[in-house]
Image (cartoon, rainbow, N blue to C red; front, side, top):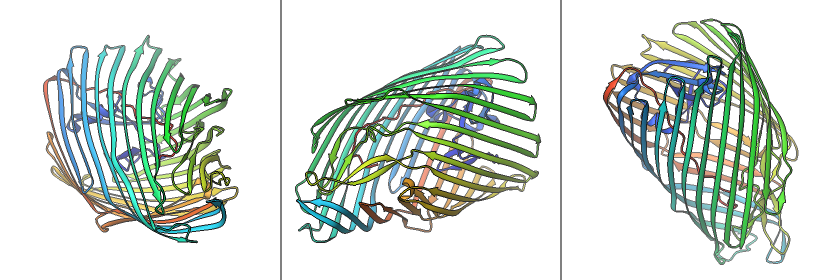
Length: 626
């Protein structure tokens, strides 16, 4: 689209603040099936909105609206085949049909993943621990490990929409199935002191989940001033996870968990257009998840957990002129939970979101956004179960975790000095309190080894600045952009650090008729995480792509990380009772073919889409490596 305010990061559209961009098609929120049936040749106009007061955009922070043709009677069908060599494949069939006021759609999607090329070398140090009734100041492990990963998945979505000029209702049925038929690792280790007679270690895991879901989404315009949107959903997940681990030739440790998860969510958004300059909106939402997990193996336990949250805010949009818009949304967040026999009182935290957008002319726009929000711990982090994973490692939940809170501020400017030249500037500051990080603790002599639980960290400050320059030359046939970004992170507490890093990315693409050639570069990347305990690095990548499209057929060849057969990365963890240094060699150079064929039938004028996102299975299971 060559829009200066939009970037594509790892296949997702991002706004100037790095936030996800919500996609709408003819003013209707698009989801998985919408995008799977989307036909680029039918696009007539692309619109970009930030913090729009229009109820159709449901309060999205940043949104793209694709204005396309629509069908009076008929529809569109798309077949997509995608294969990445050596490790991934995805095939899908989607179709949408319109009959009078009804629109029907279906999506069938299947994929698989196989990775047998990952090797890890490094070292681990376990400190101040008991093992076999002996206290050790340090146990050191030097390891050379080979691992493999597998996954198969299938999803289906069926929906129906009824629409009139002032009312729209969409109901969706979805089913997701996912299976790991067998992943694992083998390693050879050197121990100091020699606490194990054998240098070998291995681990295998299997898991599967099935998730049916039903949902509804609605829009109603009651008058020229009053309207509302809303949606609800119910999902049930059945999860099975099992693993076998052995370290140093010792007896195998077996763990198995069967879990049921019930999830309910409802959201209502009324809007009131008070005048040309003032719009008021309210958001009321509530969600509840129930987890019931039966553990066997190293832990014989039945864990029950309930987590809920309710949110509300009142948002005022003020647009004193065509080129200035201000908004303020005070509100609150209410969370409540019960883990085993422990139960919290309702936890309340105020929230606020404020933004300003100024567009003095067609060449310059400026904006500012500030939000304070709260996020509850993951269900697996707060479980009250402890699982033995190996001779030296236990996994443990922490029911007393506090909610993460964050204050996020971002100031940005877009300047188009020439028709062929655009520039983006951005400066952001985020303070995060009570971020949730792993806690490595020495176990008592009765247990032995190290327990990995979770705790709340001290405040973390994060600064970022980015600059992007884009050139569209030769009647927009040639596009070039470059983006340097600077990051600064300050952590406090036991692992306090001051971290600076400058990254760089660039891309260029050239269009010749129905063909496009693109080359892009993502530079090396460093980061600090876990309140200063963890540092990571990953190698830069050069990628190339050739695309051909004639309207009905779309063909794409992609070569990723073309300069490296192996993708390199490392991570370092440093804490009182555990530290590690890992160098990872994974799949590097890959080649992908993406073939899509789309055809339509029937009578059309303009085009609209809708569909609901399918549900992603939640889990409270402790001890699953992620």
